[in-house]
Structure formats: structure tokens, C-alpha cells
Image 1 (tube, helix red, strand yellow):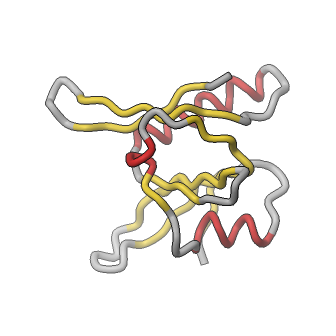
Image 2: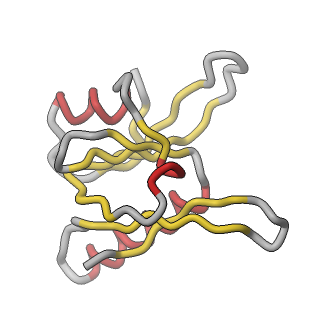
Length: 116
């Protein structure tokens, strides 16, 4: 069972299953430019099957029932900053836009921004 470190409020059993165990999880990096309507999200720890290295995974459940996930530190940091901003204004995060780019070191990265 996955160790959930942080999550949206009021997760159901089905939400937790989809967020941490779905076999149809898509990579966030494959969703560049898309606006995602969030139903739920979770940051959890899981061990890599081959290396047993423990990684933090951010998983998103869309309103359409799709599961998207990433191990990107950049995405997780930016996503959680948006969550904090929304909470500071008494609102729940409902929509984000997925953004990819290339760093100064010519490495691809994925992040997000608040969407209308």
C-alpha cells in the first residue's frame, strides 16, 4: 500500500485506488498544453520495482476519471505552491494547465500553472 504524504480533502476509497494503483496512469509530460479539471490529487511514496528506490509521486485524478502522474520535483513543487495559494484564498484548486519546456541545460521538464 502506498504511503500518502499529502492529498486533496475527502478522498474516497476509489479515489485512492485510482491515484495510487491505476493500471491506466498517463505521464503528465505527455499532456503539454492541456487544461486538467481536478477531482482529486495525492503525493505518495512508492518503491521502484527494479531498484527499490523510494520516490515521491504526484498523481492527479481528473473529473473525467483519468489518472495522470509524475515524479518530477519541479512539477510537484509548483503544483503544491498553487495548492497553498488557493488555500490561502479559501478556494480549492480545480484547474491547472500542463506546461513543458527545455531548461538552460537542454533538459526537458514538465510543470503547471493555474488555469481559469
